[in-house]
Image (tube, rainbow, N blue to C red; front, side, top):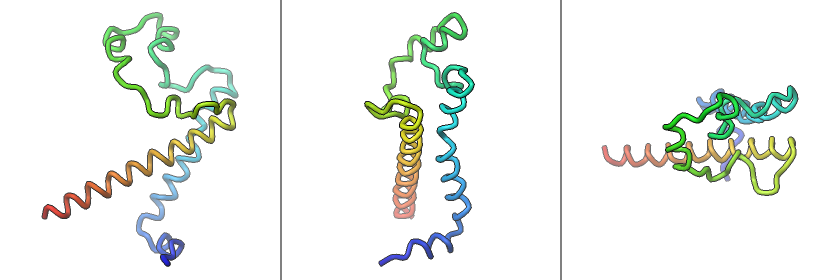
Length: 117
């Protein structure tokens, strides 16, 4: 059996993983702080309609491209997960999934490139 605890402690990437973990845990601040200060949505999380409320118009390019992409996990939440606590948990889970996918794709690309040499 692999002892992940010893492997992690010896890893040259230990600080990186700790930093990524902290960032994942802090990610719900983007929804918690606006809720606490009653300031609307998180900065930069606006859709076309939200931007129109802020600026009074929707840029033409945004109008054309707004339907181009549908997020697999819209608003980083899951169906039926309402409320600040569940939304925060969904942000953390989304962060873990996102980091996991990036790591997996990076490993696969690394193995593919190493095999070509």
